[in-house]
Image (cartoon, rainbow, N blue to C red; front, side, top):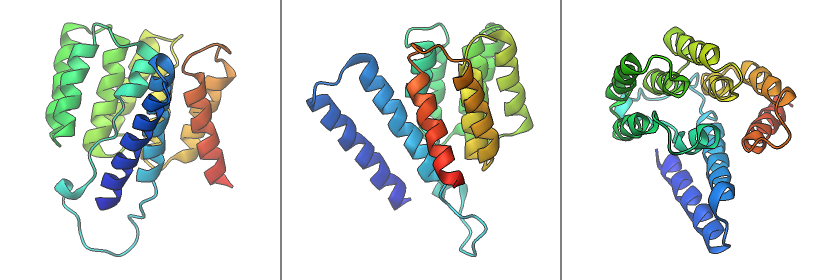
Length: 202
């Protein structure tokens, strides 16, 4: 847990330095998303197969902060955002079940919102600490609703990576890059993810 706290402190320090260097707007958002992405790699360095003392759920690190990455794909001012902000607040306190249930309630009111379905997939992965069949269904439904959007496949890839399926994550992100417009604002973040996974496959 202390390592995770140190990581968060380093992320905050880095963002502070970037702010002092007058990095603003979309570039700062991309930098924050990249740092959160690096945090995902840190979380994956654990070795659950090693002998050790049992850990309660309260001892586990909090869910990864995915809001910055979400904003890179969907923007900040969307109909789904107010629901997802509330869901994120539950998740940060460790109440991942309420976080997922809140997004489910939002989907009942807005069943055709792809961002909410992505949010549900993320919330379910946070709750289970793995890509569950229900989370996979949520991501696939988001893909059906927004086939031209790279967001559902990106977060599906992130869920695969968090579940230990790095080859699956790499395949998803490589497919995104293969069809990504050169000017897409989210492209650098996905490329960094591909580089990260490829470096660990060597």
